[in-house]
Length: 410
Image (cartoon, rainbow, N blue to C red; front, side, top):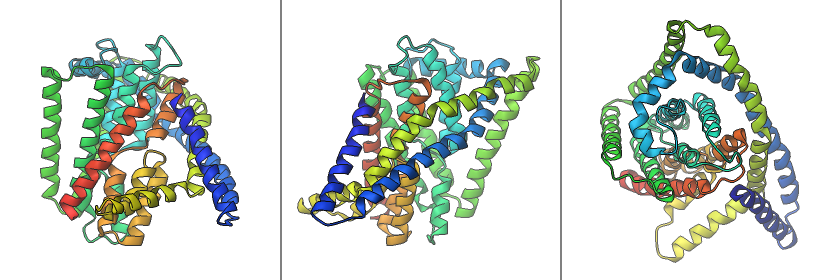
């Protein structure tokens, strides 16, 4: 229901602004631009879904081998004490626990291509526990908020863009991004727990969250001692070694269980195509709405209004120049990436705005894209408090990003 209102609002706001531009400002190009964006966005949505087919088939096949080989169940049992507190509605030891862990681990390592099919597998398993097939459950919402808060330990792609655009030290945003995305994830967990009345003040969760803080601190310390070449080499190598180890480990477990690994893989891979086709209409709908909103100039109007308000209140508006990246990130990953590149191109990769735009890009994830794809894959229409929790986590990430940017570069 919330996505329905947002979908309509994008079109209505865009149409109103475009009409004003046409009648008052005489801008005859705005409506053709909006119409072109509908076709371009629809094409993009289809191409993204089509491009996911191969990756989905690969990882759903691997996950099926992992399930039949018993690896997913082992992971589920290990994480059961933690996940039973964070996802109390999921039965202890259920295989979905392993799928959730694999998805979160892939996201943390920046392995987007692996994270999406693993996440869709987790949603499918949670849907099997859902008594109302069109309404999101509490575990689904907590899982999606963990995804939308975008905890990423190794933002390799952002560092690559900075290097390409001439940054003197492309890795200087690594620690700020890590801090900002950690706070976004922590805020997402706390906010969703409040909505769902989950008690985080217990020994298990306090030790887990405290341990996460120590791990993040250790990673920050370790990588801060490396130069940019070493950091890039270590992060990329670690991510790929872990990924290949998972694949080989799953296959080895299948052999140990004496299952037909090839046939089991094919059985799971078949679901990749049907899943990719199923999400096409949901993805096309949200991308078209976002495209129209951008083409109408609504985004530019919002940025201008915020800048005027901030300056009117007597505060520094230096950070507003990077805000398009933050506002676009919940809507479109590629759009936010374009905003980030544009900010670095316009202001300089080592400018405050250029660096802040990179921190915005790495601090959260594409909330509406994730909601549309993940909920669409299992036919969820009533998203309940998912949008509110996801956006509040995004806001926490944005605030943390601004504070960290001023701390490191202000």
